[in-house]
Image (cartoon, rainbow, N blue to C red; front, side, top):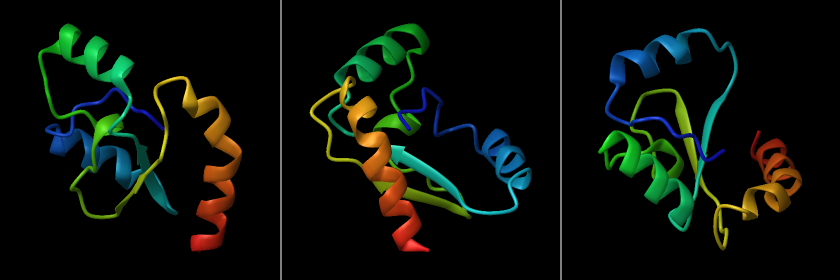
Length: 87
């Protein structure tokens, strides 16, 4: 949830996905302005997993309806319940 990781590192994503036997889910929010500002300022990269879908096979992408970065805390339980129902 809200991963500060570049979407462009396809080889790294493939390595990470290969270590997971089950589902690999990228939960992101386009409204996470803290992540957008801090990550982009630090890395100068605009494609951030916590802000958008990751287009790598086997990665499920779920957009969270948050009002900002602090919304992740309140969203954890509902997000986990949603993921269990999707199975």
